[in-house]
Amino acid sequence: MEFARGIVVSVIAGYYFVEHGNKIYLCRGRGKLRLGNLAPMAGDIVLFSPGKEDTGTVEQVLPRRNFLLRPAIANVDAVVVVLAPQRPGPNLLMADKLLALLMSMKLEALLCINKADLDPQGAQELAGIYKDAGFASIICSALTGQGMAELSQMLGGRIAVLAGQSGVGKSQISSRIAQGQLELPVQVGKLSAKIGRGKHTTRQVSLLPLAGGGKVADTPGFSVFELEMDSWDLQRFYPEFTNSNSCKFSPCFHIHEPECAIKARLLQGEISPSRYENYLKIYSELQEREANRY
Ligand SMILES: Nc1nc2c(ncn2[C@@H]2O[C@H](COP(=O)(O)OP(=O)(O)OP(=O)(O)O)[C@@H](O)[C@H]2O)c(=O)[nH]1
Ligand SMILES: [Mg+2]
Ligand SMILES: [Zn+2]
Image (tube, rainbow, N blue to C red; front, top):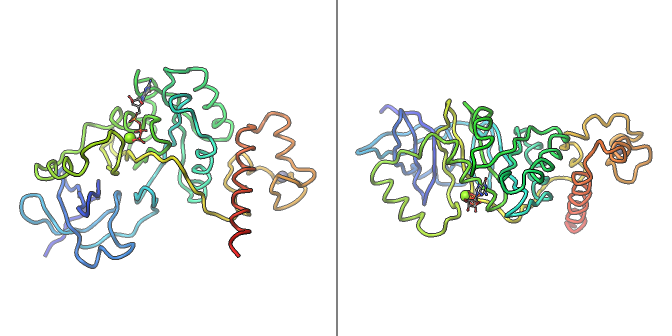
């Protein structure tokens, strides 16, 4: 039997929505697939056997280049961290944890400062913090359309994930930059309406087609984010700390060490106080967890 090759664009209640040749197949997994980490996730390239009326069975998940676990998305090219200057006010500690995680995974991260219409100056300031840290940062408004073309262009041809606090505008941005909605077969439409009923808040992960190729995933927002890594490693995942070879100590954690080039740059205003303060907070949280581990 011939298998077809497709990409999982959504997973809802044990159904895999597999796109193949401009069509979406509603698939179940072969029994053994549902075990452990073999379960397909959005972004997976899979082999499936098409059945009747746009249904099918996923037979095999092809090797992943990378994956995120919460939300579960595989083969990610870039993650857009969305922040807003107001409504809700930005949680930079959470954003900085997320950025450190992405850096540790060698994933490209960029910042999208949304709701600029509410507070243009606040948006400029936020973008400034992250540009200075070395991240591409776009100021935008999903309400007025500001920055949307630039964002689409940056993401074109890739698998991009929108991430960030609840309410910052991820769903609004994704519906602005996506080429329409997922084209679901009739029975799929009914099923997802049944499952997705209620609340405005995003529950499921779906990959939507981008203009110029590629896909964008809107994801559910989060309100807490636990970073898990060695406190020792944290400083490696700050792009603005990487040219720290002029610190006296190596490695230098840029905290209590004398003759630290990073602290000198902080005093000169070359490193953002917000980034540095959050670095200290994250470092001590990680240390505390390590101390409690034994
Ligand atoms: N003023 C303004 N409001 C916006 C903008 N973008 C989104 N909103 C509004 O902000 C609210 C939240 O937007 P969503 O797109 O649902 O936010 P989200 O990040 O997807 O939220 P979760 O799904 O809960 O994570 C909605 O009422 C939007 O209309 C913007 O650029 N400017
Ligand atoms: Mg949403
Ligand atoms: Zn140092």
